[in-house]
View (tube, helix red, strand yellow):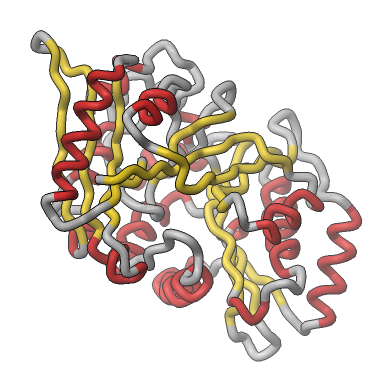
Length: 360
């Protein structure tokens, strides 16, 4: 856990994670991911000093869903030295190969539902909540070690961190027409019914993304775990649900204030006391940035402009709270429909992350 703080201490665009949160993520007893997966962690040492780290991961649920034999690597950190990088990925490759897997893919820490991807473009801006950051030399290290592109993940930005701006009027007009045409309504999350709202998200999440490349459904325990972590900082108006006239949910979005904006100066990674009071203090800071983590629409309702309705809702409700800038993503590079829809809402690509493969 200490290595990234040494490697990236002079990079002001890297937002240090809380060490206590990383510890909980790596804890096999605390993280529900390990109900369907296993992992081992490796350190590279030279002359008594740690110079690299990697996790080797067997996500059994992924292989059941996709009927392949892919192992994963994550939590990759390394000095700028090919021999160290090669030793790390070779150790991970041997570990997954011993479990009958034939491909090593990553970085994923631990899965597509966590931080994933290697930053390859957009190094001049800080990473948002739950997004990774790494130096430019990681890509050539991994390419030299035999990795090639599996898929790119695109992040887009919209608005302004200086001051909130209104969403384009043409979008507002289009959204009104869409809701009227299909007799739909949008409502915010109801915090008084938080447990029931989480159940709705469980159903929609796994149905909306089930056909996506690399998607692995989250178990009930994983969603409950994530919901408990997010509950203190959720802003209900930034979690919209789209419902039909009879109240059937067909889509939802999830945006969170970018807590990384408040944490950039926490260079030691020391964790505040894990209490609701401290988390609420973070929430009450005047943040100007948000991240749209999720936007899901049931397949039979796609292509009708509902994505624009959700983005417009999140944009306007964020502006009401003084949040003027937002990151949308990540999005699969070939998700043309959503990327084009975001472009119409004045979002532009600004970061690219890459998932890499090589034979195990």
